[in-house]
Amino acid sequence: MLEEIAWFLAWVVILYGVNYQFKVCVPVTIFCLKILESFLLLFLLKLFFFFQVHGEGMNLKTMTWELYNYTKVHMSKLDL
Image 1 (cartoon, rainbow, N blue to C red):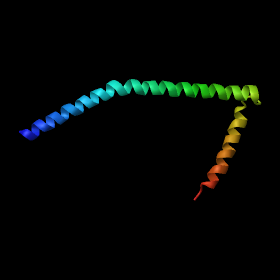
Image 2: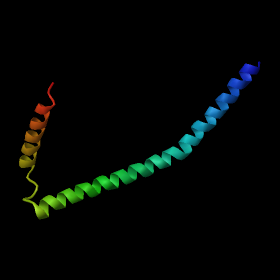
Image 3: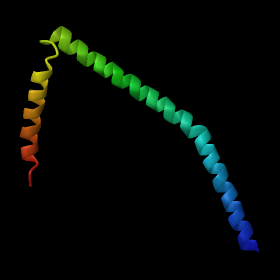
Image 4: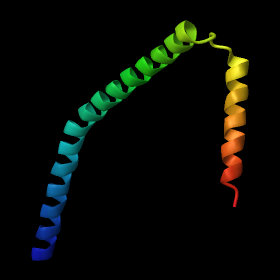
């Protein structure tokens, strides 16, 4: 009988903790995702500005080829 009461009290404490977690963590998670999204958008805007104003423009074919070559060189160094 005493063990059942202890398990019930443990369940109530866990239930309260889960309720508190969802009450607090969901807004905190959404806030962090908003900050992450704003940083990502700022990074993409700065990247676009860098290539359009300071660079040769955004040539997707050249960028893809350079990324492929860079990946190929560094992946060959990781081969076992």
